[in-house]
Length: 74
Image 1 (cartoon, rainbow, N blue to C red):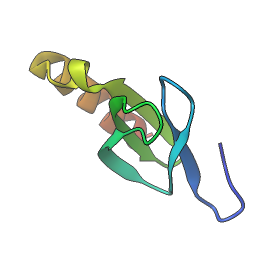
Image 2: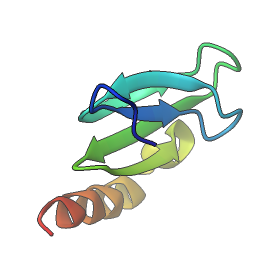
Image 3: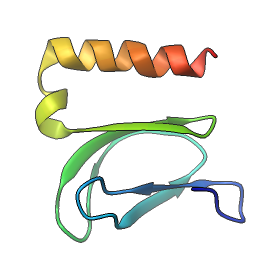
Image 4: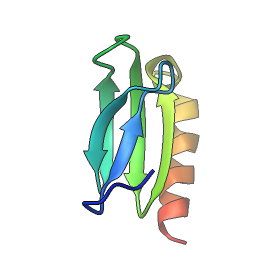
């Protein structure tokens, strides 16, 4: 979702609360409302996120990171 200041909203995949407004991010976020922990990668308007539980699985995280970087290269 785009806002007027040319940034994007990062919302919690669990409850939908907007937790961050940014042009780019590569970070772990803890939702201020429901305390859900998730990782989000946002660049060039494309956002992908996953739960911390999935991120802690190293093989899954490696595939996820490769996917996110491939999107960035498009």
